[in-house]
Image (cartoon, rainbow over all chains, first blue to last red; front, side, top):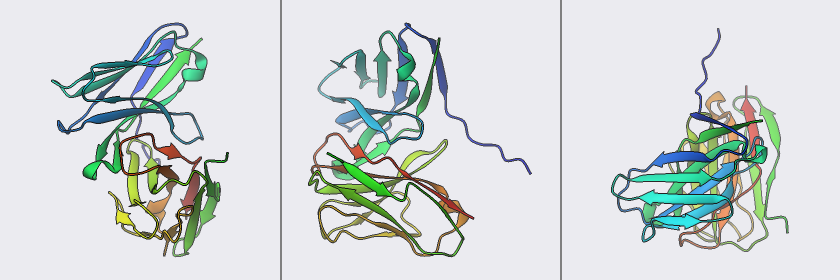
Length: 112
Length: 113
């Protein structure tokens, strides 16, 4: 019979618009967070990271915001381009910091 | 610089067969990891190694084993493959146990029939 697959949350944006991808984390003691981008058929690639003593960190076209009060992390991509289409994961260290636990991911689709 | 090399890229395997996924890194990283990726479940840690000669269990270790005989190689073995082990497997590494970027390979797609 037909199987029903699990679907990733999807964010669709127009080319040139800004994208905001959100992530909630559970461990209030986490002191480091990292964002990865994964293009179809490839391994995850590092985008940007942030330590808990910061609220904001900027990279090239990307900004990560950390709200420790509500345990929320967001990745902002400015002037989204077709090459930004990918799945984006947030991650935090667990088990004493030597392992990363990943969120389930968000699919970003850039419409021309 | 190759970074992390995984082999095979893709494999179809009969249930009950033994399979070893290979992972080699040329960055002299101490810490290495194996993750499996399934749609809707994200990346889940199978096993890890903080340094050559040591290994540890991750979130989903059952049915898998690893070894770390040297710094560069971290093979993952399925002793008797089952269909639920159909997945994409990623090897990763980082310099040490401190927080920092995890470098990933391109993945090995395994289908168990």
